Every structure is written in C-alpha cells, then in structure tokens.
Length: 183
Image 1 (spheres, rainbow, N blue to C red):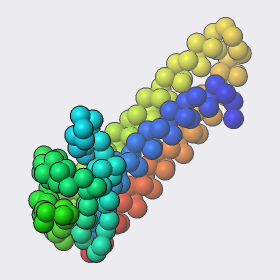
Image 2 (tube, rainbow, N blue to C red; image 1 turned 30 degrees about the vertical axis):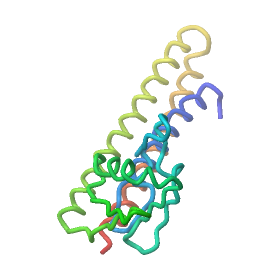
Image 3 (cartoon, one colour; image 1 turned 180 degrees about the vertical axis):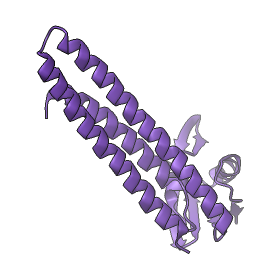
C-alpha cells in the first residue's frame, strides 16, 4: 500500500476502533465489565478507572461484582456508578458492590439498536471525512508533484479502503444488533 494512502487508512482504522469501544460499552442483557470502562473514581487525588482500584468479576451472567482493594473506596465507586449513564443502582454490602442487570425489554432493545445505528452513522461520517481530506490532498498532488493519473490511482485506492471500512462498520452493526435482539 502506498504510504500516502496508508496515513488515511490508519485514520479510518481509528474511527472503527472507536466504534468498537463504544459498542463494547453497550450492554446486551448480560453483564459486561466493559460498561465500567469510562467510569473514574478519585483514588488519592487521581481519577482512576474502576478496574485499577478493585477486582471486577462476573460471578453470574447478569451480575458484575466490584471488590475494591481499599474498602474506603466503596462509597466513591457507588457514587460514580450512580452518576453514570449505566442506569443500574449498585448494591453495597460493606465488602463488595454488586450491579444486577435486569433483563432487557423489547422496547429497550429497539432503543439500543437505534443508538447503535446512530453511532455507526457517526463512524461512517468520520471515515468519509478522512476520505474527503485524502482526496483533496491527492488533487493538490495531481497539480504538480505527481501526474494526474497517479493522483487518480491514489483516489481510487482510497475509495476502496473507504468501502472496506464502511462494510466493516455495517458488519459490526449487524453483529451487535443480532446480539441485542437475541433474548
């Protein structure tokens, strides 16, 4: 792959990675520790991920259990979870915090599918913006540094990469939709 095209391929790959991260945080009825990835707890003055201040386990399919190494953090973890958009009330027994995920209703599943499609559309827009930037750069190259045919070839290879990433995004959406709609 041409180095000039590789730069844009890397940017598109980052958009896809960001989408995968977003999708991992969307819960599908089962307990997924990734829903806690964006949460931070104040640990000795430093905002730290929950996974770094305690042991996060999934003892059952719909329960996440957080056992902080420092028991004084229980209240802070509980507050962070309540302030987040997870939508689950934590239960604190003095030693561990448990998050019990309710079974998703049909309406909530459909809502989540809409959210997934919206995030996917944002990722496609990001990929297309990278393509646009690349095409503009290649057109400028075609007016001096390289021949117009070579610039056109660069644009064509960039379009092929764009198509691949759009297809990958669609496949991700299909997989996540299937996961959500499976009861």
